[in-house]
Amino acid sequence: MRDSDEWNEALMLKRAKRLAKIALKLWPKLDVGAQAVAEAELKDKKRQAAGLTVEDVGGMRAPIKKLYELLEERVLRIDHDISVITTKKNRTFYTLSPFIQAIPRKNKLAVILTLDYQELDANALGYCSDTRDWSFVANVDLSGVYCDLHTKDDFEWLSGLINKAYEETLT
View 1: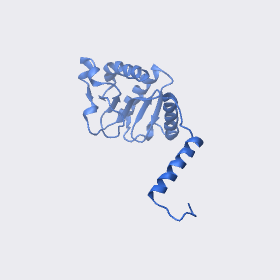
View 2: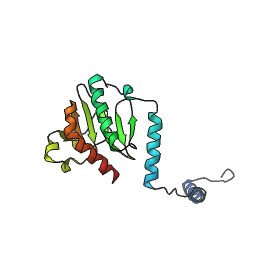
View 3: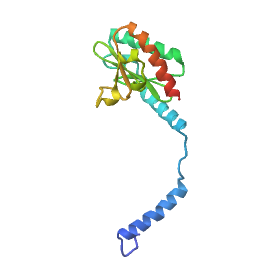
View 4: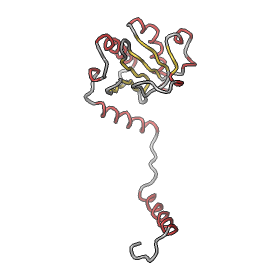
């Protein structure tokens, strides 16, 4: 290339094709299963969240923190392999993929469950909203069903949804 008398688009494309063939021989296509990718992503999220606790989540004041602790206790009772990933804005429960996200609000704990709103039973419809139609939910990166927890009594209807979200994330 340095010694060539001419350098134009056609020569650039010809060289690019030649180099692309060499690159494919040197670095073949990476063939990794979806589970390995999910495991690596979860490991990276755990690394990023290392050292963060519930105290680091903005807005997690005493009454809301108590609701969060009850939520965490119920979720981890399902399976001890569930991971809790903390950010400055929320805490998310993972198997290999997220299935519940808890976000502190002024006088409540907002919970997003990765469920299809259309598949909820009539009782749950009265407590939940469908986030898939919402353009924005502050401090949330999951979509699905949105529920507000105000008191520990709310766990009576939420427990079944927690189990359902967990089971669906495993399939």
